[in-house]
Image 1: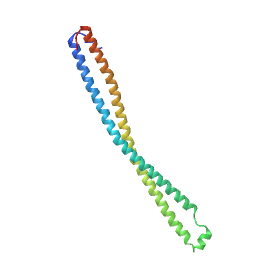
Image 2 (image 1 turned 45 degrees about the vertical axis):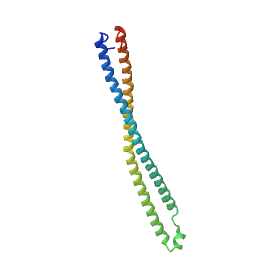
Image 3 (image 1 turned 180 degrees about the vertical axis):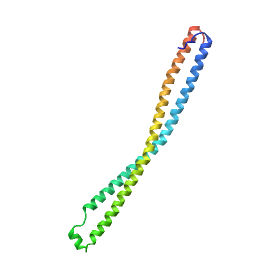
Image 4 (image 1 turned 90 degrees about the vertical axis):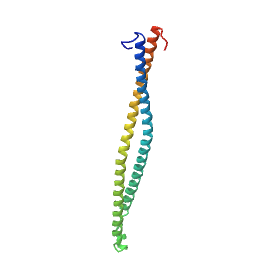
Length: 163
């Protein structure tokens, strides 16, 4: 309770003014929570889309790596080279070069997807933090409002005044 408390109508009026200010603050905190929820829905959709792109890029890269490894294991032996007039080795090298290029492209796309996901995660975390701070402020203001109401009731009850 405040030091100016219960000296009559003036103290109850001051407590009511403090309650009104606290209620405005609580309404602002609630509005911030509502805005953060709306922003979180939007940012979450962007984050999910970025994660989907990342998963796809990782799957494409993995498939390219597997294909290159399988092709490397299928390198033509001496008999295959002789049977094709030594053209099998040249075909294999061209195929291996194409697969190596595909792996490099897949790795580039995977790196791009990772870079695109990082800001989406950071933005999502920032909105979650802001919402948490607003929720904590709302809880604090709600408790302060309850204390102000109790103070008003005590002031009015001590002096027999009706609110």
